[in-house]
Length: 86
Image (cartoon, rainbow, N blue to C red):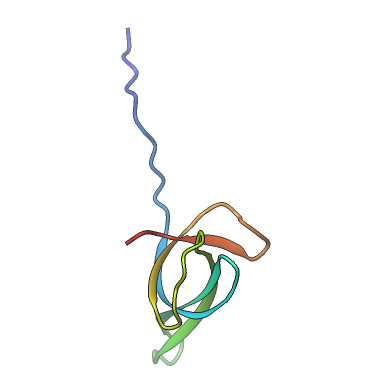
């Protein structure tokens, strides 16, 4: 009586773009992401930097390289992101 549509559920996974600041770990790079924030009281804009440990899946990235990465399942205690192919 009612037709069930076969819909594929695609998750809207957050992605970021940042600069590689460390590549000394095996299969991991540290990427710094800069965002522009506004102070709630004084309304001045300032740049905030957050560093993420990102899984590279065996690929090599040089210092200063710009990479795009996304959220994924926890890979280790501090690593929850993976580099996306561009």
